[in-house]
Amino acid sequence: MKSKGKVRWVILGVLILCAAVVVLRGLNRPRYTAEVHLEVLSDPNDRTSGPGARGMLPKDLEYLDRLSVATWISSRRTYRMLLERPEIRATAWLAAQGSDSALEDLSRWCRATPHRYESRITISMQAKQAEDAELIANTLAAITVEALVQHAQETDPAEETGLPRVM
Image (cartoon, rainbow, N blue to C red; front, side):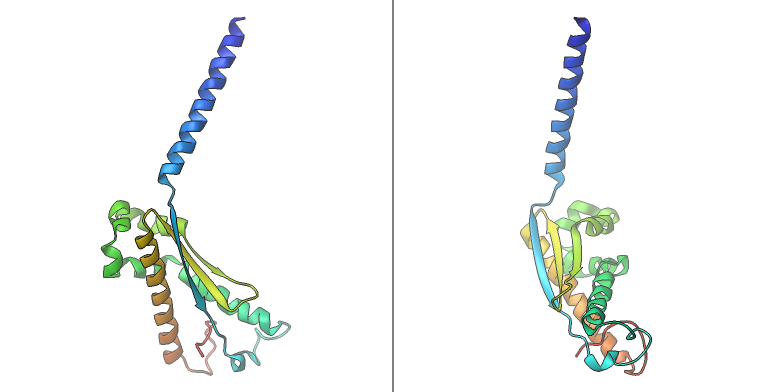
């Protein structure tokens, strides 16, 4: 009889602990998501020859362009560039995070997703305040466009760099 009582208390304790974990995780979870869609147009003349063009369909090559841009967006280097912007430094999101955990938080709540069958990349950011999520996603998109334009202006068309050229 005594062991049944102990089992009930253990089960009750486990249930209370699980409920507390669910409640605490819900308090830390962001509530707003902002999305920005970037159109990435590949230069069709850029992929007519070379080692990467053999055996791949043009759609696959275009997807690889979008994938390389999305990977660049999700890199720590790009996140550091984002955190250096004055408009991001002024957000309540960064004040609450502190600069130490901001990179980890961006890695967790910010996503750049290339679409397989469409010529776009979706940048999404989740934050507790809608304005912060929107500002971070838009600023990340602006950084990406600036970098792509700068790359297109500096790159010799005959040079193979692996990054897509902007049309």
